[in-house]
Every structure is written in structure tokens, then in C-alpha cells.
Image (cartoon, rainbow, N blue to C red; front, side, top):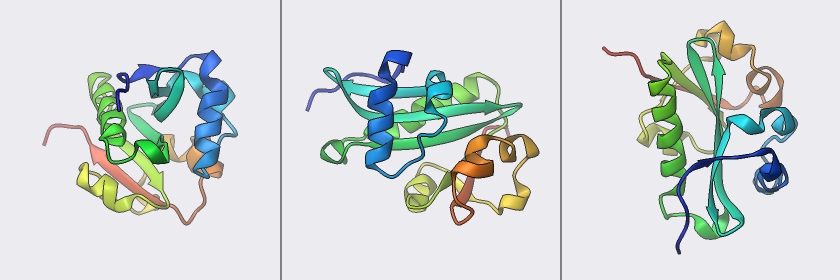
Amino acid sequence: MPVGSVTRLRSGDLARLENLLRSHHLPTEDCAEQTHIFYGIFDQDDLVAAGGLEPAANYALLRSVVVQERYRNLGLARAVSEFLINQARSEGRKAVYLLTETAETYFEKLGFSRLDRAQVPLEIRQTRQFASLCPDTASCMVMSLSPN
């Protein structure tokens, strides 16, 4: 299945992004004001994978990595995730955090580790995604980008 590379979404892609997120029961409440932090992979005009990277001081929050069902197992989630992690690294972020209800095992394979919410930096806890959009039951994970 031929698909494109990871590209930044534009305001004209908002409806596609919201539809993709909604179809996978992911929050869409702040997409209109946050479209610029999302990236995606298209197959022609069809948004088939997406994810966001929300900056928060020296850190970043990985947001809503999602792939259409029929495009799963093609490495698209990995492509989006690695693109965003590399972007955070190139921006000099110290770590990337995420919240997930369903994909802990997947993100562990990418190098994330589980973390108690109380250990998350204030800048990340103050993001709307962390503070109110994701449920308290979501697992918190981190990948350090700082040199050892």
C-alpha cells in the first residue's frame, strides 16, 4: 500500500484529523487550536496516520498517535512516533512524555518507560491533554532524551 512521508498538518486538515482521532476514541477538543503540532501520513488525500508533539518548556508531550485500522502493521505508528521523538530531540527537549490507555506495551518497545504521574514535570502536567482531556486512569510514560 503506497503512502506518503510524515508531514505537518495544516488547518485544512483539521476535519480529517478530528475524524481519525474520533474513530479511535481519542480526544479532539483542542485540535482546532493545536493543529500545528500534529503531523500525519497521507495515502492520496486520506489521512491514514497521525500524531502530535506538544512543547512544554524543556519537555514535550507525544499526542494521539493513531493509524487507520486498514493501515496497521505497516510501520506507520513507528514512523510517526520516531519522527516526533527525533523532532523533540532536535529541539533540545529533555524528555518526551505520553499518556495512554491502550498502548503501553507498544510504547515500551519504542523505549518509553512507565512513570508515576506525581513524577511528571509541572510543565507537562499543566498541558490541557494531561490536566483534563485524558482520564486519570491513563498510564503515564516517559522517554529521556538527555545524554546519560
